[in-house]
Length: 105
Image (cartoon, rainbow, N blue to C red; front, side):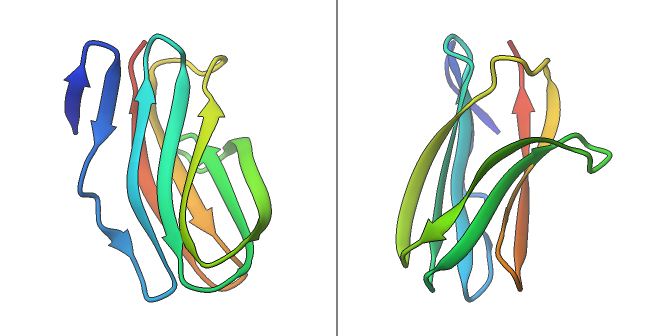
């Protein structure tokens, strides 16, 4: 985890991957309360991105949609979330990757 500047906290080089998908980078921008996720998928298909509390309870279904193979970047709203550590997951029907997303506002 590194503080990029006073407004952005980033998790760099997280290297969460398998042969079909990888999470490249995740970070949030404090001032705008927006989260950003960069990830890649090797096969087209339906993918779901969720934000959960540490106990595993999903609190935000960020996105579920068909994705083509390649690198993807999405932004999502964190406006109603409190400071803390959350779990961000990327999954399809056969695989799931997770990473921690620490928030401090």
